Each structure stands twice: as C-alpha cells, then as structure tokens.
Length: 434
Image (cartoon, rainbow, N blue to C red; front, side, top):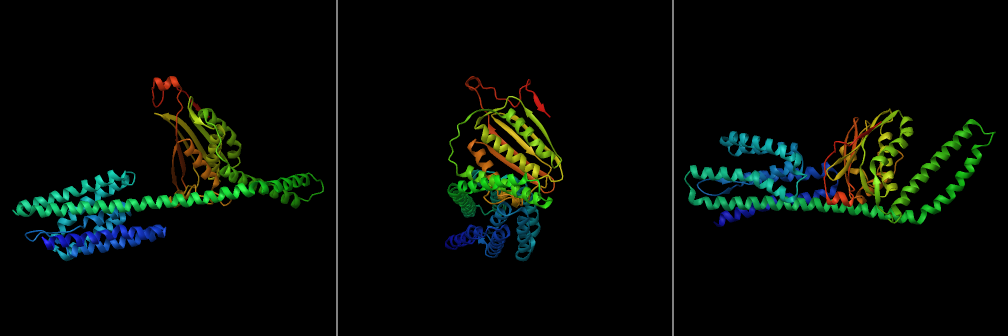
C-alpha cells in the first residue's frame, strides 16, 4: 500500500509540471515560443509515466499517459496530439513490444475522437470541458476493470478504483490550472488594452483641441492659396496633398476625441433597416472610386435601441474598411434580417482578407492592417457594439475576403412584449434589394 501511494504521488507530481510550464511559457506571447516548452514537458511527462508505471496487482502496470495526449490535442493543436501519440506508441514498442498493436488500435480510435472533439472544445464552458475529459477517460477505466475480471484478481480492484480516481482528479486539476492561466492571460491583455485606451484618452483630452485650432488656420490659408491663378502644376499638387493630409489628420483627431469624450448619448428607437440603406447609399460613391459594387439585402421593419449617430458611425467604419480591402474592385454585400430576438447584420467583402494572427489583433490601439491606419476606427466600432449589448464575429480568409457579422438586440414595443411572437421572418416581410 505504501509503495502504491508513493507511486501515485510521484505520477501526480510528474503531471503537475504541465500547467506549471504552461504558466511560465504563456508570458512569451508568440505561439511557437509558448507551444514548444509545453510540448517538451508533455513529451517528458509521457516518457516518465511510461518508464515508471504504477504497479497495482498481479503484475498489472498502469500509467497516466492519457493526460499528456489529452493536453496536446486540446491545448496545443491536433498535430501536437498526433506527435504525442506517435511518441507514446514508440515508447510502448520499446518497453512492451507485445502490446504495441493494442496501443496502436486504441490510440488511433482516441486520436480520431479527439480530433473531432477539439473543434468545439474551446467553445465549451469549464464544466463541459471537465465532462468531456471524464467521458473520454471512463472507457479506459472500464477496459482496465475488464482485464481484472478476466485475470480473476477482483480482490485488488479497489487499487484500480483508487488509481482511476487519482487519474481523473489529476486531469481535472490540470485542466483547471490551465484554464485559470488562460483566463488570467485574457484579463491581462484586456488590462493592457485598457491602459492604452486610458493613455489615449488623456492625450486626446489634453492636446486634441489645441492641435485642431492651428490646423484649421493652416488649412484656411492653403485653401486660399489653392485659388491663386499663377500657381504651377507642381505647386497645385503640393497644396492638394497638404490639404488631404490635413483632412486625414483631422479625422485621426476626431477618433481621439470620440475615445476621450464622456458617454452622454441617449438611446432611442432606431430603424436599422432604413439606417443601413442610408449608409449603403452614402458609401456607394466612395466604392465606385475603386470599382466596388455595394449590394444590399435588408429586411424591412428591423428596429433596435441605440444612438443613431453612433450606429451610423459603426456601419460607415465597417463598410469603409471593406471597400478599402478591395483596391482592385469587387462586391460588398450588406444583409440584415431578424433571428429570434436579435437583428443579424452581415458585411461581406471580396478583399485581401486577413490571417488568424491579424484577426486576433484587430481592435487594439495603434494596430491597423492599412498603411495609413491607426486602428482606432475598429476599436471605436467594437466599443459601440458593446454599448449596444451586441456581439460580433469576424471570419476571414487571405485573398478571398472578410465577413463581419453583428447581432444586436431587437427593439420590441410594449404590445409586442406582452404578446411575443418571435419568429425568424414573417411571411409578409419584404426584402429591400438594390
């Protein structure tokens, strides 16, 4: 009993290295710098647990090799899981050549199941993740118990139950610690962004107005010079470029001010259908400059609560970004419809698209995919969506385009609230198309 308990503690300490290394490597930021140390400790834990297995009874040896495989699949990538299983089978062939085919069949099945489960694992809650881990581990426990029955060593089954309980507890603790690491990283990232926004707000509040005053004077003089008759072609070009840069600077200052300005807007009932059509008409001339065609598919009668000026600014920003993502022309599709209790708006372009790394960075201060961008436009857009209590989803493929989907709570009159009839689309609802 003493040796059995000591072995269990030893294996627990081996496995607890995994969340510890995950915590340390997560501060490195870069994906490969984070994953490489974690994969290395998974490989080491796998080697140690298989080299020094726990002896239960009658020459039966068990280990915790399931845990490194699980972590590799669900917290790095399926490819890391495949490599971990390959290492596991290689170790099995070295330590116990007679069982290699059983291990190959078992972990091939596990590998397929893990691959499909990993697609939705990250979207699950913490309890759901624990449930998935337990569900996957239970068949292993049942299989081991069947072996005990076949070899007629039932009197030592209590040791197997203790080992299985410790295994599930160890896996649960590792999942908990890794999830807490991820939550802390997310909170730290939000805190860093909040500090940047606060710094921008203070900067905007202190200097924006002072910068705008001399800019207005300079722009006025340049506008007067532009009307002079004796200017050369080069001088006219210089003045035109100067005016454009002043306008761009003024736009950036407006973005700063919108971040620093205290929120005093009053929400009211807004016709989202009409507003989207208005913004689409407003952006068509801008799109024609780069041969971008704007197509709308917007259902009538969609109303939300919010500030109409902010909502208009939100969709102007998004459509402008989509148009600028198609320098060689293309089609910009704007659609909106009701889905249960939300209004779903999709803005889809055929532009240059973005990688997953760029998608992750979107909305952060000073980050922009455009050479002359500041990143403030999208940050303001995300802030408006949050104030409207909405959600957004961005999907993008490089060289194919980007889709920006927004879900906003619908507005319902008191009569509709008393007699709710939330349907996706009513039969009499008409679609605006242009």
